[in-house]
Length: 296
Length: 186
Image (spheres, rainbow over the protein chains, first blue to last red):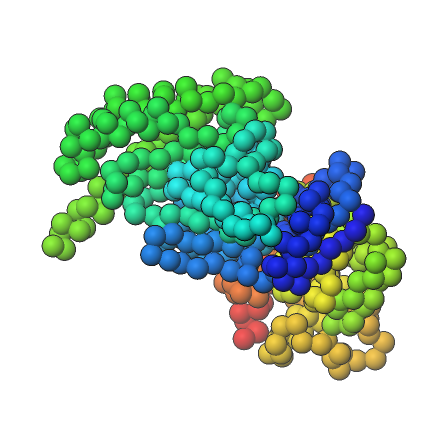
């Protein structure tokens, strides 16, 4: 095994081009587990720890360019206003020690269906900045997950950053597990209201071979909210609409039975989380409307 | 490969390190610092917690090569680290302190205990002791930036450290005690 220690991003890209099977390591919270347990013996480990810009973020007009290695603890602390869904998701990751090391780039690279960041990224809207010596491309998050622990990266590409849309409305995140810390999601759900486009986006984790959106549920809810004039009148979402939305979210799942839960439990729990996160976000949207109207 | 880094204020060099080796292994097996414990090797239990450039991490999940040029504090250096902090020195400053004869800043031998260590003893928060080093490092770091923690703050800060003996109540008592003593001392 070789340990490659590029001192800059350019060197890292060159190393990945020269050794396409090299395994990138940043926080190490996935890679080191596999090495410790002898599940993986890569020819090359590519340490990204000395590439400082991977640990930085920039807040732009429309989106946040979040460096691949920004630890979850910093997202929780510094990006709660811009990326509330991702900040909530970050807080559910493992433990403080893990959140101090792990970041979204690793979650995307591993592409486990149980990765905590995925539902929040899907709901907010995001693009993955994949870079190689050949150039840079932005991969829409909807096209990024291609299979169980598979993603759209080419062998010579590294994740430089993820561009996450700044919140234009309330976002929520919910995760089912046996306790509040150190839990791999039994299933998870992210929901974002986008008042500017009058749309709702979802993200579901651990309930299909890849993280997914519940597209049919989103379309149903978008029409129901539009037809009922809900975005303008700020009424509570009709219970029958919320129930139908929850049922459609559950139907979007394609879960398995495993040690953490059964498929039918996961479907049920996703429905419950869909209804709850819709209620929480909608209540907060209505509250914000009242505040704005009161101030006007 | 060779790895150079600072442990408990002293420059260290480890040779013939295997590329897939963890920082924990280097500390325990190559530098003779067995305070950090090896249990789950997957970041679940927190018994290997150390400070890496001041930040609490699971040393079993840090590749040794990633520690190159960085500052590590283990439970052996906790007492000196805490003493240095109470003097108002910049964190990470060299710990070649006038801590008296017969003490060793690297292994902590002969040094007075850190307040959090004394509080664990006084509160009876140590049973088998295997989880204790990780808990001490994590709890000390919390008290560094949150001198008046709520019970929820303590539970969250220690949520990555498993203890199978105590049921955590005595550990909670110990951290509350350390916080109270710290605020009295100011």
